[in-house]
Length: 194
Length: 435
Image (cartoon, each protein chain N blue to C red):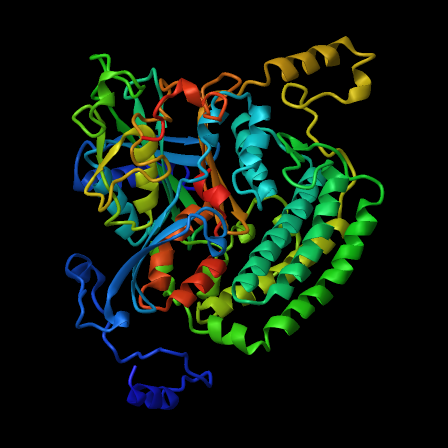
């Protein structure tokens, strides 16, 4: 884990190529976090990967989180690892919710229901070209949070059924509510098999 | 295949002393993407030249769970492959957001149902670091003992079912015999055979009972001989050797690109194991080796798992020998239940007990990613705490989920029978992949 001064140096190095990418740095619980703009994400990731004295060449995990009611609402986390030095760094890209304010949520029955991929979804660049391992995990983040990864080779739902509507792991998406069909309550959902 | 091809096969003997049936390295591989739209179909073609797309699974006994593979075949040869998963997705991560921290543990244990101690350790370790809780040394040792038993258990199930897929049914019975002894041990310490909920935030649920150590030592004494038996069954089995050697090779660089970890990566010659990284439980106290392969084929993957079982037995022996005396759970009443006998005498203990059981403990705001070395590779847990008694987000980076991305590289160009072997040696667990 790079310590606080080391993290500042990394932030400076990234800023040298392009300004205004790093928003914040923090070291908490022994975990170094670099908060970046979504526009500068690929620059930051490729800098961390290709800089010889950084060499974070292994991407262990990509996952999203919903920080409702905070703004920006979403974040995509990239857990990078340098295997030679056994150091980890977390790059966190903050994403605004474009649907905020017009009442659309990921929950069923809302506006977003009709168009699964539309302008109301947050967007970020895909890092599959830099780290091929991100493919499944970006699909998972899209599946559960409705975050669109621009440039992803095959952005489809991965764990939920392909015809599913809504983004189930958003904080405003209700828990449960999908009745399990048995023979005794089959009558309550007529033509369910269609 | 013409008679000439057959003759050439004879001359094409590989350095390991035999050639594989139907293998002709000189024939150019048909580009799958090119053929997908305009595959040669028609009366003028031999059946083995036609392109055929089939579903393998989700209900296929050799996919080790409900995994569906969309396979494009030309004759026996795999041209393209797409895994489809999610059939046992149960929304565990979403459900965890509605449970207090201590109620999350049994949920996450059920993700990868062959590696429940690892799931629990990933989650509990993450929460412990978020609240800044040090766990006693005895608890660390007990966790290591159970996790290494769990690793052997997981490898045994993987090995047994893979050998079963390759036609060696007796391996299945032998592996499950030893697995049962491990489950007996889990039953002694945790009260359950699977999903024991033994690992708690702050340590472990209970000290090991009287007689556990003796049974564990018995197991450690007998296990190396059992591993010798597995090797005797498989290492000179020509069918097993010919089906695993030189099959499913993916280069080390490609595996790293794809984020593959665990025995798959080590079989390709990369000595990467989180247990050797500093500050991870008490693994620094034990003397053990990281087995690595050289070629990275199915045979190496099998060898690495066998060698890992031996090393795990060594770790368990050292841990039980050096098991420190002392408490098995931290003494912080804000996070850990008070001992049962204090409840009848101490008002304070009663209040703490009531608070912990009804509301659960609160975790200060923060977020953390904590990886452990599971039997399938890096198992990471990401927890976001918002200051309440329920996590705002729990995410598991399951090694099987990420490793599955390498499956296409292993299979394309090979035979469909090799696909079965590759999947077995990949050792996926659909409970972990789908969560």
